[in-house]
Length: 128
Image (cartoon, rainbow, N blue to C red; front, side):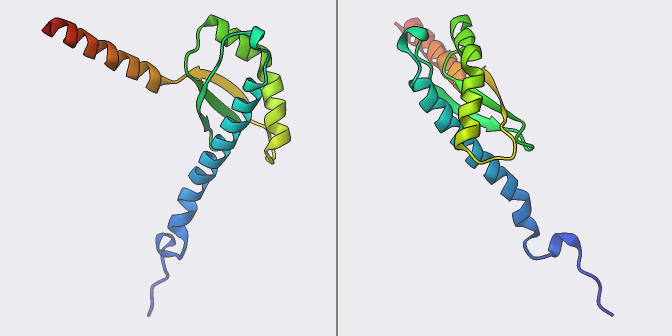
């Protein structure tokens, strides 16, 4: 008498779990490219230069969190002013069932790096 195979043992079961994450990463990268190119086309007088450092897309592709280098009030206002234009560009250039809503946030890695530099400068000044 043979025992039925469990779901975990089926061929390809492990690959299905990682596939959505890979797709999320690919879509995030594409969104980053589109947003960065659209921001580069903005009028230089519209505000400060904005660098897109990364994009995280949720599992359902409803929200794309766009990370920028610094997010002060002036940059937040510029981004909010062009958000619909950026979403429209993403919808035109990337083939998805639904265009994700763009949400802008400061990149935590940059803030952490600045904090580390500040600590190192403090140590260096203390040693002198």
